[in-house]
Image (tube, rainbow, N blue to C red):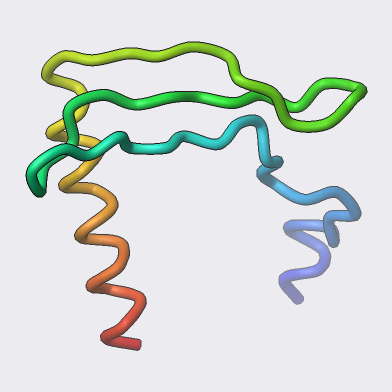
Length: 70
């Protein structure tokens, strides 16, 4: 019945677009580095810092905790 409402998808709903690495010092994230996929493979894109880091670090901790709870 649901097949009539929502046809099967052939493509994934998400795709890997980048990797983000947290740069830590004294137990906390102080910066992050992003990489992007190029025709030659993964390459550095940019560094960033600021309040976004704390949110990213919290999200990673929550994701890790939920993965171990499953």
